[in-house]
Length: 136
Ligand SMILES: [Cu+2]
Image (cartoon, rainbow, N blue to C red; front, side):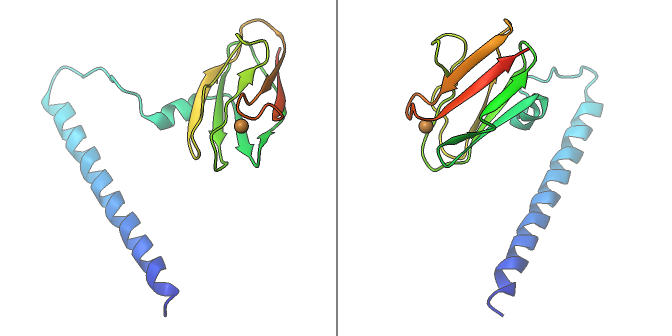
């Protein structure tokens, strides 16, 4: 069964990853209870940033999805590049926001302007890619 074999391997890998994870959790829980001082969480996991984002732009096939979105002032906007080449989300006014290059498969989070208004943006690498961020 050539199809079943890789599937079984995937399940086993996931299971052992889970096992390693719960071991880590158990270890850190152990360390936490052993020390009276609670260590300040110095580094937030990347997923926390993503979870805190209030809006998302997905880049697919040289398009921003959605092309137009509305957020509140100062909102965190997560941008995922699902394409195979780098892209940016860059305000055409040049200063409001600019993600810089987002590598294929990567995501970044930027902060929407505090001033309500309509902000056109492009990909600075592919200026025909256009969208509008409305802050309201
Ligand atoms: Cu681009």
